[in-house]
Image (cartoon, rainbow, N blue to C red; front, side, top):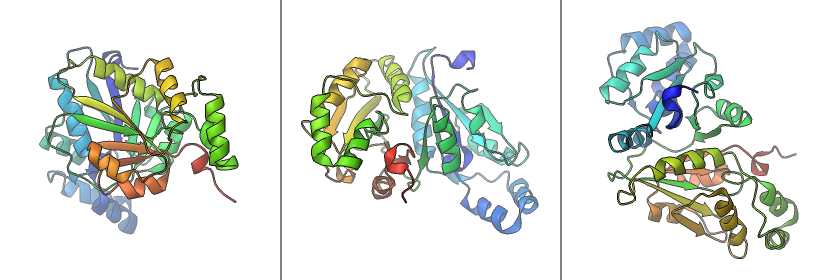
Length: 302
């Protein structure tokens, strides 16, 4: 991990998540690499349109105007472009005044292998294959499945997380999937004082919590919420798990199976992470949504 980033929240974002490269990608698919390279060089002084992760990145970087060193946020750009075709991306970063200085341009290969070298806590991408590789290597990662959205103009960044298979392991969800709701409820009651194992986003939540603690409480520039299909009495194990981790969430919403969209809108979430694609598809029109392809819900079915 880079020394300067030891105390920072480090987030890797792919170029196609930060900017809208759909038109350019179409040139690549239909006309090939040479035509794509020529197109990018020809348009390298034309700023790219904002992508799915742009608004979130802008708000995160703004925290550096308030948070004192050594804390803060570092955003790293990861791209399948070469440095030559990637010049347009850096020109766009400069155009939008984004404080992004670190990047890896991988010349057609997947950039996921640099995530740990940069010390990243989170990887956001539009490439599901890269996201799965990151998760397999112990880094929180999500495929952005929403449209580019204008987030609220307030400086506060509101993170929303699903519980099982995201913050927590999928151990309880496996019981629900294989044995049903009654067995799940009985199992959670029986183990209510036994903390759940951590899921793929536990380490990111811990780093986010550390950053949140470095900000004066009166400013409330980061808020976190658990938005889960669980209900009482399955709530207790969740609360005790977070207590055991010494992590505080600002809000916890136990929905008992109700759809999540209206609650995410009421919370005014900037980004939401869920392991189930259907939840992401429903929420993606209202909030930047990351699908976390982890756990039993993402295992292939016969």
